[in-house]
Amino acid sequence: MRIENRMQLKLWREECKEKHQKETCRILICGGTGCLAGGSDKIYARLEEMTAHMANVSVKIGEEIALSLILNSEPTKPAVISYSAFCFKKK
Image 1 (cartoon, rainbow, N blue to C red):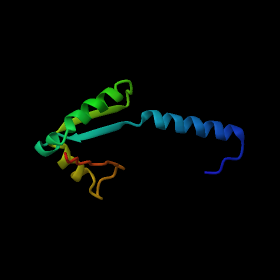
Image 2 (image 1 turned 135 degrees about the horizontal axis):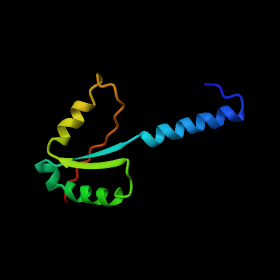
Image 3 (image 1 turned 30 degrees about the horizontal axis):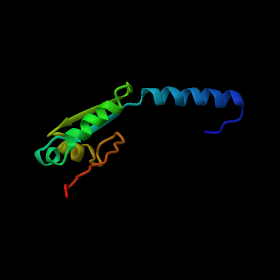
């Protein structure tokens, strides 16, 4: 896209702002036995607290989360999905 004047810039900026407001963020936390033993329930509680004021963010925990992360990352899925998985070991 080539922007040639201020009006086009303003329109493009508004379009981008609208798209950004429609975006949602899902934080998925594994609730399997090993993850819970590593403290994932504490991470869940903290993330819930940190995102309570954010309407476009949802935080979920469950055993099925680990499997859904794998299935949703398949290259055949049309949506862009980003995720991180953390495993903590107690010393």
